[in-house]
Image (cartoon, rainbow, N blue to C red; front, side):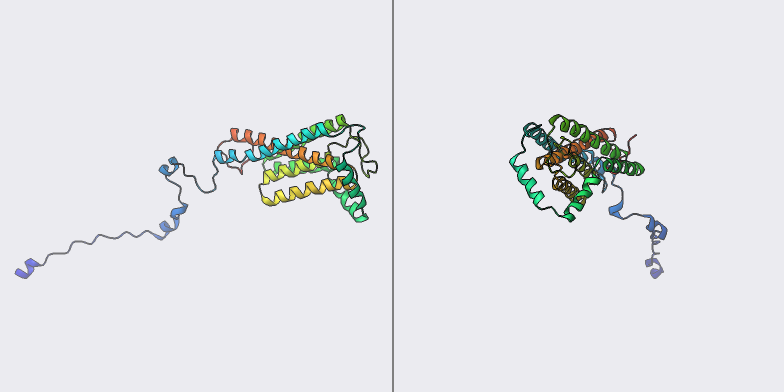
Length: 267
């Protein structure tokens, strides 16, 4: 009796609930789970999501460069000698250097960007870019490319006709007195810079710079332009590309403030 009284029954063990295999597989890791409402209210954002403020701040560098390039082009437009005036000493020096370095191979290479960057070539390139971006449903980018090239042409053509600068006498290309600014270089810079702004990769900027320099060299190697002509054309192209991109990006951000940068399809 005494022994029986001292022995007490054990309490029933609480069963341990183990998660089922399928439940474990469906549970995302801690770092992959969506942030809580408290974290969101504190300003936390999922990885890869860009705030409107960050996207807006990225516009100011192109705007600054575009304004400086435009200012440089305007200064050159009012200081470069126009119709009937003698070329600048630096233009004569560079022209003589290019002519003295001419070879058959060099001329063949120089004609490549001259033909590609000509009127027909740039029309075809522009249409190809528009079709590509439109097919990829990146219509903001397609409109940006189109407007940038239109602005570049709308400024370069009247400026060349008004200034009426004489080309070098030994030009192997055009002979019309519309040397300043270089339309080939302006369009080359516009297309290259606006694509680099859209792609946003370092190699796009490297290719853009190389293409602009290649075009400028080609135009002076063929004696179609003076050195200051291609410099002014490059400044105009950079200004047109960056300022148009800034305006389009500002409009896009105001219309789609919560849209990620990869979605550039307008309504």
